[in-house]
Image (cartoon, rainbow, N blue to C red; front, side):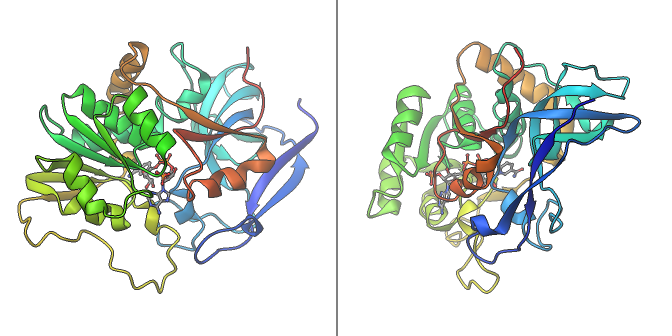
Length: 341
Ligand SMILES: NC(=O)c1ccc[n+]([C@@H]2O[C@H](COP(=O)([O-])OP(=O)(O)OC[C@H]3O[C@@H](n4cnc5c(N)ncnc54)[C@H](OP(=O)(O)O)[C@@H]3O)[C@@H](O)[C@H]2O)c1
């Protein structure tokens, strides 16, 4: 039986606008005792993701709202410390929708065994997990990517965008990434093989920059950010183009009375564009097939990844808030304890 303290983060406010550290509270409890069919998991890595901003609201999001004064949920990879469930043994590496916490005791049906396939265990939270699956679904299933397309990806140096762009390259496309720093644009062109990139924070005329990098127009736009970046890309869409609306992070902190225009714009001359939003969980039936393909591409070096790792559960809120400032290159993770050897 594990003993000691368990630090866990709780949401204590529902912010309007930008969240701050004051919206979170770090609480110490005892390490939980697993009940019948439960498994005690020690968190190794915890994921912070943009969609969690929606979970801070009372309603109004596709994911359940986080209750106030209770531990917040997150995808975690961890090690089984104690098991009262037949499918898991001490020492197993597992993934689940657990907590912003050092330990969690959950029913075994909430966990799955992780097979890192030779890659670091952290990849189960990005390229070989939900973000990798999202990148695949958005390009292949929703975006119908095809050879010869010009594909623009926004949020291109993030967890999802960096993989989406590489999948489009593998599919035989010309790929242009939009990201928020020179370090990020250098990474996606020099290391990931994007054909061109734009630092949207450094150009005066984003529409002109997109037109310059996409002389044949845009056939597929992989939309991660919304706002002015999205507007600039929409102006270059070709006939029969597709827009895969994955996310709109630039709008997630907008207060409810924000009167900026949202949603697909500049379509008046583009009546033959298909704009389709999607949620990765609607494609669970494809997960095994999709992640097998992505894992093969990681193994043969055609997909590369990067992680930004913040050390210590005590720094989890700053890792999360950094997503809205562009603090991460590749996947933002929180390292909570040492991975098993
Ligand atoms: N549909 C689904 O099922 C699904 C699943 C997973 C994720 N998503 C969405 O996919 C998008 C990317 O998620 P991720 O996990 O890969 O996050 P991420 O891209 O790794 O991190 C967020 C990045 O967004 C950029 N950003 C922040 N504020 C911005 C703004 N105002 N304008 C433009 N860019 C901004 C920042 O990069 P820069 O430095 O480049 O600004 C930041 O690093 C998010 O919108 C997320 O909600 C959707």
